[in-house]
Image (cartoon, rainbow, N blue to C red; front, side, top):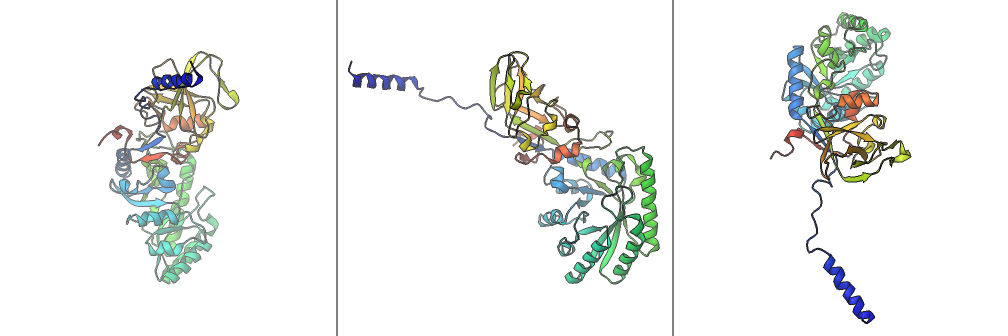
Length: 400
């Protein structure tokens, strides 16, 4: 056979070895992580607080709704009457979405956009003379009256006016109120130890708040809103509720005291993107912090610390696949984790549930907080950097 004939024969053989139809890729193996937000859980939690506290509820949706996204409308539709945020830009974004409910922003620098807040009817917290006069000047420029909540520090040594300047701050605010620059509509404080309901510190700080309100009244102020209780106080310290309860973590299923049976609203999933069989004594990931004790199957999930998973959890963390728990092994990388699924029948495209309410044997945000040595608040607010957020429950994912 000539060289040309041999080449032609090889080409025919190679073409014959290629199937006419290539096999379809495994289902869902290309998908990235998804973060499901259960609207029903948030609604249920809001209704619980409205009923349990007997006060109006301020839905605190700062930090992108504690990582849950645009949930203010859900809270307002289910019993909340106020909205609370940290900064004026957060408040302005809500106003731009058409949310007209009473709104408070309480953590702003002296040179904040006070005029924007005044023009949009946003209440602001004031903690110092500098802030008070900056807001009053902005009100004069805007031709309006600023609505203020004077913030008293009762024990956090954080934001809030210190006790030694409180009386003078009230006098200054009353003078500006007489001049028509401001209107003091609220007094607020924040308990330092509400997650320990029986702590005597709560009694001390409540008394400081009550005394601060008395001082304000004696200086001529008549605020209609008195709010001290946040989630833990609203749940477990009825004496801290006053006229309004600020509920943040509780909306999303977190009780800082770990007592109340609230409903977690987040479910975090990722598909099995890669499977491989390995022998015993196989090192996994950077540094080979983990080596396999036996022959096993490793599943790779396309999610990592770049998506908000805490690396501090990597020696303890687990996921659920098909209703069974499996350990994350090796280090949590920026974009991926490795899961040891043993000899179980896990397939490409299977959905791993990293975090959820715990109803499908999956880990909860409390589990992740314990594995990481932190609090649930930090876990949920760090998620969603790259995950596609779906405003429905995981159980609704196939609903049409």
